Length: 314
Image 1 (cartoon, rainbow, N blue to C red):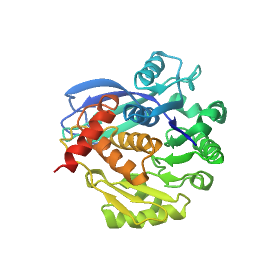
Image 2 (image 1 turned 60 degrees about the vertical axis):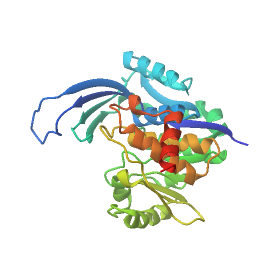
Image 3 (image 1 turned 135 degrees about the horizontal axis):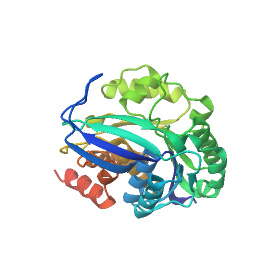
Image 4 (image 1 turned 120 degrees about the vertical axis):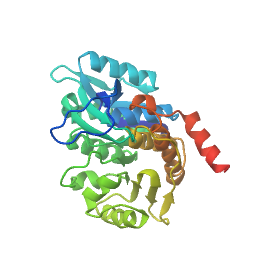
């Protein structure tokens, strides 16, 4: 039987966040109203989210041999994530994300991947024992596609469930067939689903159309997140399930998708069905919008369960 563990292969970055009344247009300079620096990167966020949601987690990735890298590794450890398979790159600095958040909580992000681009097959191979023993492998697209593909194939070989959050989706929407054929569940948001399928995803009906296109690409299970609407699960051999989101006062959507993915992986690794894991993920994603920044917004297992229970009683 597989260990109840999540292993995350992905990116890490130092997030530099500025708050503004609105997002600037091209060529415009506007005054910021707040500033903060937080641990970030989709891989890092999802690993921390899974750790806070109660899972045993191992992070596989690269940071620079610099102050930001040191801080990110320490932050992983503080969030119940095993960082023994992290590599500090001596040739490239830690990844950086510049994030602007407007008064409605919406954001725009520019990333400089740096050390993340050097994640390689050898790094994955060195973590092979952890990947083979884990219940679920969780990946994104902020590291080289070759590394994700190698990790997915290794996990599939050992019977580890493979989850891919295709974010950020490639501009042309195309991912290698070799990668997609080794993914058990793909978890895009509306924009990513549209880029990959050509279907404009705005509601449950259009999400179902996109899910059918994605299934033909390789993954047998599809989860499309729909923001305030919740998430659609199309699971092999079962009827599609639309899971509603939770009503909260959103102030910053940064890392909401990462909170969803990390919490989903945690629930699945703990023995929950995909359907229950999606419900748990929706609650985590909603809670993540109620606080500023990536790391500070990731909810704990207790907070997620409290929201789920309080909503169920209404």
